[in-house]
Image (cartoon, rainbow, N blue to C red):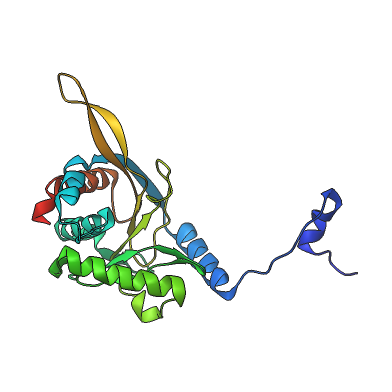
Length: 237
């Protein structure tokens, strides 16, 4: 007796269409399943004040257009240097933690093939303009032709941004062999109490997912606070 197809269970209820996953989608599915089942994920959600960052960005010359993501990547590289456990990878046997002395930041890019993650290398040594040009080039390549594996490996931590779409937070899945990933959604004006009155401040929601075998909750909260402090002094970046 022939075993019924998976889609046959839905056919009695109405019209359906079966679409095979692409090879790329199958690879992504396997990687995400492996990461989700092997890593004890915890997500720390917080809002960081980026009012000063936005004022600084608008003060730049018109021909210098820098995305908030570039500032965030630069701040992330600095914070990784101050919190070594975030810039690490845990061996499969769970007995060895590899601490990295380089600072490469992956940034997820949505394209026709799905999410690709180009890696900006040596973010700690490059200026914001160079990083912006590099990300623009890699993003265009990802959307038009796809990226070679060499452009998507060697990352220390990944940024997954929904800032251009919306949302107030989500749970990004750690990109193995990394131990943390930073999700960012659309910044919005919120009333913030300054001790005397509520002030309108531009707040950026951050969602930090991390491997709880390596990172504890207190350090995750301190890490996000440090990112906020760095973003509050954008000229120093």
